[in-house]
Length: 56
Image (cartoon, rainbow, N blue to C red):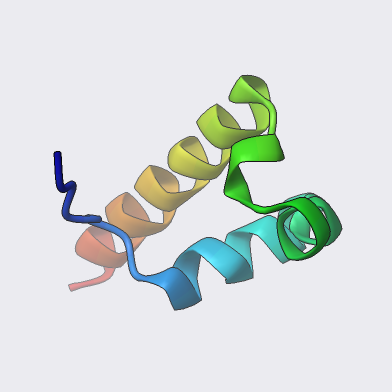
């Protein structure tokens, strides 16, 4: 089954760096990132999108 990502890879890596999980992604891949950290990445992306919409 194919999934289309709603978030660009660039944004995912940027947030991963900000949250301190980039090294795990770089060495072991996204599958090794904990569920909690994935949730934090999604929450951060939503926060950024909401902030962007409010600024318009």
